[in-house]
Structure formats: C-alpha cells, structure tokens
Length: 405
Image (cartoon, rainbow, N blue to C red; front, side, top):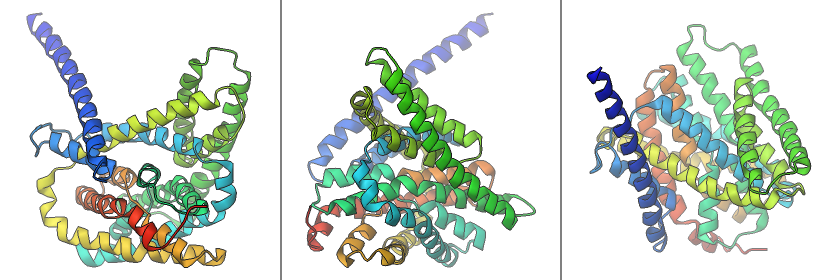
C-alpha cells in the first residue's frame, strides 16, 4: 500500500515537472526568438537550438527519444499549421499561382527526390530504395518556414511569387508522404510494392485527400453560417473540425495534409460570422504549434551522433539547394513562362523545415534500415537550409531586383 502511494506521488511530481519544463522552454524560446529577430536570425532556427540546448547533450540534460509521441505531436502540430496556411491563402493567390504550384508540388517533388536520392547513394553508400527515401523526405518545402520567414524578411517580391511559394508549400506534403510510404513499404516488405498497389496508393492519397478536404471545407463553412452561439465557441468548433478532417483522412488512407490545407482554403475564403475570430485564433495556435514542433525536434536529436555525418550531410544539402531545387523549379515553371528572376527566387526560397524531419520518423517507426542515420542526416540538411536560405531571403530579392506589385 505504501509502495503504491509512493508511486502515485512520484507520478504526480513527474507530471508537475513536465508542465514546468514545457512552460519554461516555451517562454525561453519566444524570448530568445524575439531577441534574435533583431539581428535577422530565423526564428525557427532559434526554436530548434533551444530544444537542442535542453536535450541530453546540452545543459538541460533532458533525454527524449520517444518517436511515437513525437509522431503524434508532430501530426497535431502540422494539422494546425496547414489549416492556418489554408485560412491565410486568399482566393487571388490560388488564381495567380495554382497550376505552377501544383506542378512544383508533384513533378517538382519527384525531380528533387530523384536528384537528392542519386547524391545520397554516392555520399552515404545507401541502397537505391534507402537513397530515394532520403530524397523523398527532403523534397517538400515547409509551410511554416516559408510563410514565417517570407513575412519576417519583408522582402519586396511580386505577389504571384509569394503566392506560388505559399501554395506550393501547402500542397507538396502529400506527394512526399506518398513517396515516403511507398519506399518504406519496399524496404520493410519482402515482396516490395507492386506497381498497381503504388498507383492505388497514389490515387487514395491525392484524390482522396482532395475530395475529403473540399467536402469538409464546405461542410465546415455551412456549419459556421448556421451555428447560433457565442463568438468564442467558433474557434473551438474549428479546432475540432480540423482535427477530425486530418485524422479522418488519414484513417481512410487519404492524405490528411492535403485535406486539412484545402479545408482551410475553403473556410478562409468564404463569408461567415466566424471568419475573423477563427483566422486570428489559428494564427496564434500556429505559432504555438511551430514552437512545440521545433522544440521537440531539437530535443529528439543527439548532437554527438551528428559528428560523423556532418560533412556528407552538408554536401547533400548543397546538392538539394544548388542543384535539385533549381532543376525542379526550372522544369516545372518552363511551361508557364515565368521570368528567370522570379524562378530563381522561388528556387532559393524552397526552405526545408519541420516536415522533412517529421517524415523521417515514419521509416524509424516502421523499422527501416538506417532510420536513425537518415533522421540525423535530414536534421543537418534542414538546419543548413533554414540558416543559409532563411537568412538571405531579403538580400536575394534585392540581388535579383525584384519589386512588389
């Protein structure tokens, strides 16, 4: 009896410790980010750094290696971020840049994955499926990183360029998830993934995600128009609806990422009483989700394990930034006859963020070979992308002589 009481007491104390640590880390990350923003440091880089300092190799000595919890937390955070991205995607942005963005989000992801995969095989000696898996997880640009760093940089660029970057970052996750899941299936299944199964998986991911997202967006819009309640209830309804859309699509085998983004676009571009309060609430929630996500990813990594991989990982990041991304952008924008300066800027602002690191959790949970090594490689690639590209958005716009509309 006494032993049980002691266990309950220690569990309560541990819960209080976790709450205290979470609050302190969140506040410290925000204050550090506000301070560093004065010298132009990308905020997302600061959040990751705070997580690493709090981790087992840093002064905080917090050991966190539960990838199942990380996957669940990351899924919820990305659902909030993508829904907010959809809410802030205005109708004119869709008109200006939908088809170029759709090309970048599908064909562009495949091109980038192929080039990075070939480089990964040469740099790390991976088998082809593992190499292409590394290419697939690093292919998508990050909605949070692109939106936040574009806004904070105050770069003067044409509106269609901003629209293309933001819409692409909202649409390209499903293609990367499809490639990641398919390649993981090849790695862990003795029979691989037959071509007809791959085609069915693609249709379910992309087509199912689009149908569920559009239908759910109109359903949420209809509910907001007819719900007679206090204004403060609308954000709660939106949170429940967003989680239900994302989770429902994933359970049905469709892309929750595409569904939640499209639902946000429909909801954000319709007239209803909840529009302003929901948009304001999700802007704040998205910031909280980004802080939690990047802090958690910083805690997950073990810095001393990165040392043997740093040089080849930096080389891989160079291939991604200076070869794979420009090639994908050039091929995808060629039919639309965009100006070379605009294409060059879109190529440079193809920022990687939390999504590639999150996607590497999938092969880890599936028991794929070299899963931990891939996680560490992708972490280095993301850090370099955010640091180099995120720090130079405004100078790149000036160098390319871009001007706002």
